[in-house]
Length: 219
Image 1: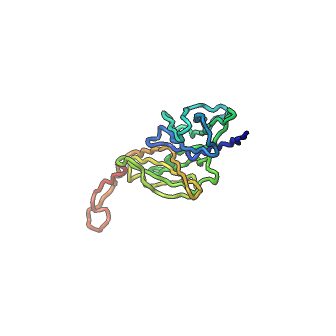
Image 2: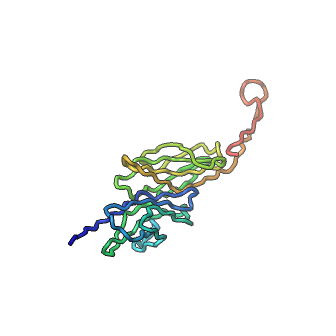
Image 3: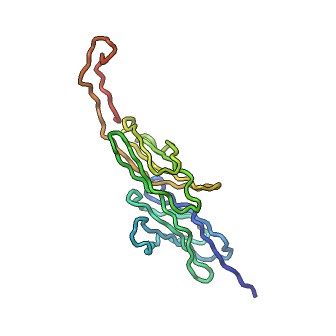
């Protein structure tokens, strides 16, 4: 007569906004469950919801699957919280830890400036090691690395004259040797095109204002 101790543990590795930013990618791992024979249920809630008890089932996958893509999301409105539900051999539900994606917003505090702010990534046991800012302009399909801001959740740019349209994303790095990463939504700022037209020029060859030059910005 053998008693089998069933202590399954679900570890959610990350939730990460996709490219483009209208879907979410999830990855998890099941441990201590050699006889696991049930499906997994992916559950979601709006991270800003007042009532945190009403989780919505967004998908079911079989026991050999450890990833999921949640589609048709508007990630620019609010962050989402996820957890994975399993069912143990005694038919009781058990859950992974809960993870919340990074939610990024942008404002133009002054002409041709961008101030971006984001919410922390939640869910990693040892937290976030650092955040990195990526950005792209109209010509670029994918964002490129711009700066590392440590654990700050805000940063500013003042080079809007260089590109009329700028799009930003944040990548979080887990505080761990075997670090997972997670992307935020993408935000866009469109600067009003501007022409700077000098109101005086003096063609007297003194080296100042000798030519009438129109300076375009972000066009």
